[in-house]
Length: 442
Image 1: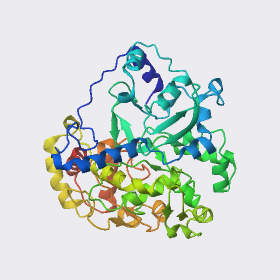
Image 2: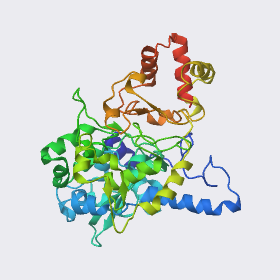
Image 3: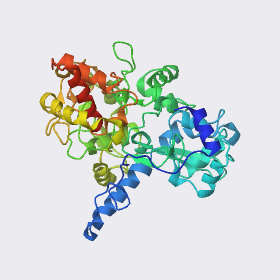
Image 4: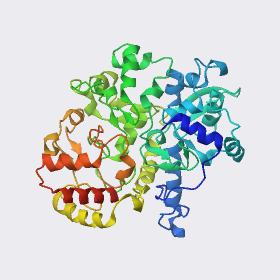
């Protein structure tokens, strides 16, 4: 995404409010184009889904005490001219690091002003206004009542939602469950004027922390850094992984690239250990100081909070996530006849692991690195030491940043070539081409 292009489109007002041709994953409701219609007696479920969506989109779990209180990130965003520190973060800069704006959260007057070029997208004060109106996807600013920010919190949607760019690049309707592969988490956290708490946790200096954060790049995050302290792979590349999708998980065992646990497990893990929300979390596997030295030292396997802002929300959050269906790719993005032939190739060569309609194994869907022809570095950082068979639906949403946990394969062609070589599939060139079109159709 080019920030200058965003600026030009916004100022010129050239964007339209129409949505693109693919289906937008959202809570199953009568308003959603692909929704299953609910009967009147489904009202309790609709209430739970609505609450789960609220948690996913807007609940900070009390993490503002960390992002604002400890890291003082809000001060870097508002800038010295508005009571903070440094130059501040303008809307143009915010879009440049992958933050997204929910057009449905904007007042009509703001939309009209953007179209008319009457909004200064170089002014951090505009960013503050967007944050305090819940218009920035996954980030909420708490107003100090004086035009600045009192603190700042983040939500699940920060990494696992994006927008459809229907108004302008980076500005549009929410797409919940889609991985934000533009989001530069490291650059955003690196804006903090005080990273001493992170440095202390990892046992390094702040300069090292900032260098590690800068190494991640767009669409990547290293959740395990704060467990094992491993910032880089043996080959010197960043250990950060690409942000995964949070849609299409109904019926799928395990949630992340290397397993760890169920969807509610990972929600609790992230809410407490990564987002730094206030909640209880239990996993004695993290007591293993040889494998998870940072976590063991910090007691991350036995976190207790009073009050607990996380546990009571796990059920509705889980139900909402399971309602997020994988989006369908636009029909003009693949050859349908070739895809039909590719489905036959897939059934004969790939379906042992990617079992339709889940496109992962029903059951314990885990494999060693050797089984899939890659190293075991990331797998070795997890309790099971294996990789999960990733569900394949909605692959088009994950093309940016590459495929596999670390984006090592830039294209689907490269993935097909890898498996053809590693598993000795013996695919002909036409079979590879057809298989590729089938994968693009999922």
